[in-house]
Each structure stands twice: as C-alpha cells, then as structure tokens.
Amino acid sequence: MASAASKLYSDDVSLLVLLLDTNPFFWSSTSITFSQFLSHVLAFLNAVLGLNQLNQVVVIATGYSSCDYIYDSSLASSGNIESSRTGTPALFASLLEKLEDFIAKDEELIKEHEHEDRIASSLLSGSLSMALCYIQRVFRSGHLHPQPRILCLQGSPDGPEQYVAVMNSIFSAQRLMVPIDSCYIGTQSSAFLQQASYITGGVHHTPKQLDGLFQYLTTIFATDLHSRGFVQLPKPVGVDFRASCFCHKKTIDMGYICSVCLSIFCEHHKKCSTCGLNLMVLHLSLIGREKLPIPKILEKKGLVLTSYIVVGSDSGPNPFDASGYNRNHLREKEGRTERERSSILEKKRTIHDLIKRASSISDPLSPFDSFRRYRKNDLSVYLESGRGDRLSSSVKQHIRKLLKTNMEGFYGSNWPLQAKVKRKEMSCADAHYIFVCELCDGKAYETSTRRIFTEGCNQIDGFVHYRFTLEEEIPVLYVYEIQLESRIQGKGLGEFLMQLIELIASKNRMSAIVLTVQTSNALAMTFYMSKLGYKISSISPSKTNIPTILAKYEILCKTLDSEAKSVLETRSDEDLVPSMAVQTRDREIQNTSNA
Image 1 (cartoon, rainbow, N blue to C red):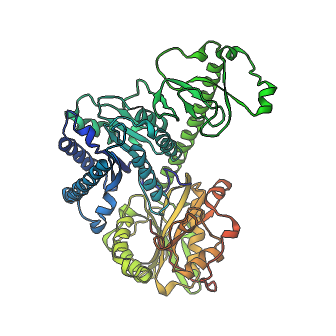
Image 2 (cartoon, one colour; image 1 turned 30 degrees about the vertical axis):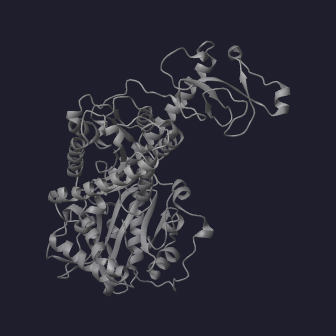
Image 3 (tube, rainbow, N blue to C red; image 1 turned 90 degrees about the vertical axis):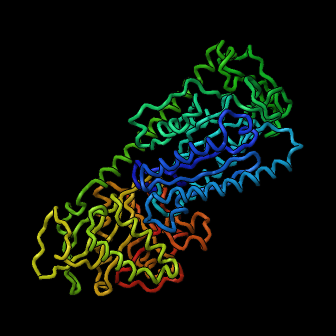
C-alpha cells in the first residue's frame, strides 16, 4: 500500500494535519480561553505555511460527539495558486467560520446525548481516522505530496471506550510511517497521546505555560521531519503504557489477557467475550518452570490457559520478574523489534540519499553523449538537459504554449485550473528536463555537459519533464510530461526519448519508471502499454477503487528490479490494454501528469 514517502517533493516540505480539540467541557474549565488558544494556533499555522511555499496544512476539529474537516490549505489556495501569502488572513477567516458552524452542530449533538454517562473526552479516534484517510487519499492521488505528519492539540482526558479504535489508528500510522506529534494542554496526562507519539516516532510535549503556547508550537512542532535529525527535541521521560479493559472500558494497571486474541479484562472471565474460547487462570507459581505443559484433559476440552499480566503500569512490582523467564523473553522481543526498526530506518535513509544524489545531478545526459543527437526519418535534432529552477522566461512561455496546444483538448473546461498547476510544477527545483532542439543557423552540434539553453539561439521543438522521487517506498523516475511539436511527431522520437529515460533511470539506480496518462487518451495508452511494455500500476486509481468519475487517469509503470515489480505491478491478467485503444502508431503521444 501507500506509504509516507510516496512521490515526495523534498525532505523539508511538510503536510501537517492538525487535530484541534474543541470539546466545550474542557474549555469551560481551563486557564486559557478558547479564543486565546485559537490566536496561538492560527499564528502557528501561518508560520508553517511561511516556512515553505509548498507546505500544506489540514485542520480537523475534534469535538465531543463529532469531528470534521474545517480547513485545507491546498483547496483554499487552488483558486489562486500564484498568489502570495498576503491572502493568508482571508483564508483563515474561512477556517473560523467553519469552526463556528462545527461547534454549533457539536453542541446540538451533545444535547441529544445528555442522558449518556460518559467521560467528557473528545472524539480522538474519529479525528485520527479522518487524518489517516486524508493522508492515504493523498498517497493514492497520483500527485506529488509533502511528507505527512499529524499533530494532536488535545486538552480533554482520554476516553477509555475509544482505546481499541485509537490503538488501531496508532498502529496504522506506524505502518504508514506517519509520525503523530502531540501537544497536551490539559491538567492531567494522556496515555493515548504518549503511546501515539512513542510508537510512531513523533514528539510528545506538555507545555508548562499556556501563555507561551505559540513558542512551544513553533520551536518544537513546526520542525519538519528532515530537520529533526539536526535539532534537539524533547525526549519522553516516561510513557504510560496502561491499557483499557475490553469489558468495562476502564484503564487498568493489572489484568487478565486472553492468550489467543489478546483481549484484556479487569477481572476473571470463564469465557473470552471477544473470541469465545473457554479460559482458565494459570497460577503464578508455574511461571518459574522452563516449560508450561498444558494438561491433556484441558487440551481435549479445548480450554485455553490465561495468566495475570502487567499491562503497562509504571508502578508496583511486576509478577513476572520473579523467575526472569518472561523478562528475558520480553527483552529479546524488544531487541528484535528495535533491530527491525533500525533496519527499516536505515533502508529509508539509504533510499532518500539515493534520490538526493540523483536529483542533484546538473546534467543527467552527460553519461549518454552519443544519445544527444537524433537523426532519423528526415528529422535531425539534439537534446539538452535543463532544471526547473533555471528556466528562462522565454523557455517557460514556450513550454506553456506547447502544453496548451497538446493538452487543452483532453482537459476541456478543466484546463485553466490544470494550466495553473502545471505552471507551478514546471519551475520546481527538483524538476529535470530533456529539451528537443533544432539549430536555427544550421551549425553543427557541439557536445558539452555544461550547455545552458539560452534565449534566442535555439528553438525548442519538445521536452520531457521528469523527476527522481519515491513511489511506495520504491525509488522511481517519474515522467511528468512528454510533449512534442506536431511537425516532429510520428518520426520515432517519442520511443527514442523513452528509451533514453530508461537509461537515465538505470544509471541512477532507480527501480522503475512511472508516468500518468489520461484515460481519454487512447493512443497514449496503446503507445505505452503495447509498444513500450508499460503496465497499469497497482497504485493506479482503477486498482485502488477510486471512482472513475473522480480519477480520469491511469498510472503506468515499467519496473527494473524484482522488488519494484512485486510492489508496483499488478497481475498480468489485469494488465490489459483498454478496449478503446486503437492500432499502435509510430508517433509520439503526449502523456499527462496529474501530479
């Protein structure tokens, strides 16, 4: 499935999903007013957006009975992508308006459930689930995205009845490698948030002075994941690992656990209410033995033994410490877990370093000088490298014109919005280009790894826009655009460029080439799948149950090693060329990027 490192912009670009506690029961009894709290939060969000123009912020309100999205910076700015941050206060005005509506609706729900005997806790499990759903949707969207993380601004006490749902969300975030940061502003402590930050590798902190909340937020939680390796962040002094029992939903220090389904109970039950198996208590005096044989009479009756365990208490003696058997077993298990985690992190760092090295190369064409010239079918052109942050104004204008000519028909009425997105993408620092050029004066082409495409000396007849990035934790070369003038199409140049892309990917140790094609572009689907051997990827919308009305594109891939093949490719019986495709034609077909 998707992961936190899929198609990253760069290491210092963040997607911050903020869970905002709006529980009226908490705010009616705290030392800081809700309006003061909001002023700190809005200033913090403004600071996060100001750190990098590509940063994104999503705010989810966590109420007593409900939770909802109240702000998404990507949607708020989509109407004017090129505008500056001077419009930020106006955007936050929309946030405050939606927040006011949410609080009013939540209060109505509270009145409907006044008769329920429940701790005045916020619906943390619901907001965590919504945050993970949003992040997973971003992973599967086919767009470039920043590194996601979740920040819980919580003040309400934990709700033991939410224990299972919260823990499921925490472990889901861990598998996605999405850290959960937590800032607890309540008077008590939160075992949920402590465990969430500890398990996912996030930061947990309880501010001592709420008047300085903005300083805490900016100095601790505004730090992006890449920069955290260079700063000293607060370390947890102790983590409250206490669990909640499944029977009465209360927090316990010691309890019974089913040895089959691991359900936790505060008192002895003859039958597990979760899996339905019969239970018996194993006396603690048996723990000192090397083997704990189950009597045959119990095996015949299908009885399962359970025993007392300590489920996360930081105080009091551990009954398993007497023999040392279980203590050593736990230490061995913890050692294996730590080694596995270290191995995963080391692999992740290696992949990120690989992407960095590839992205920093000034001229990826330099090892392939013999491929810089294309002479075939009455066509003679040469190829130059380029970077998105070094494009001249005339080159940008020509790229926009070529995109409009080739792609406006496929997007229809959506083209104005797509044109703005593409203008933003073309100038990114990690955008690499291969320019197809013709000499205006007929001069011979001179091989040079330092050629700079300058205004007026050459003419661009086409280009390839690609980037080195990650897809499902796999290093890939992602082709954003391949566009050619109509007069040089149908001469085999498109196939030549894609072969060159494969060489560049292999040279830089990428594991696959990935690209996006509009489903309405039947010729492009045929060109890539039938002629070049690309396959519909497992992360393509048609393979991830995204409604076709929302996703009008397919993600195609060609893998270069077995690991990428097992992750990115679908089964061969699913990789059929769409029936709308026509006979393969030897011409360049434009692929489009919704990234």
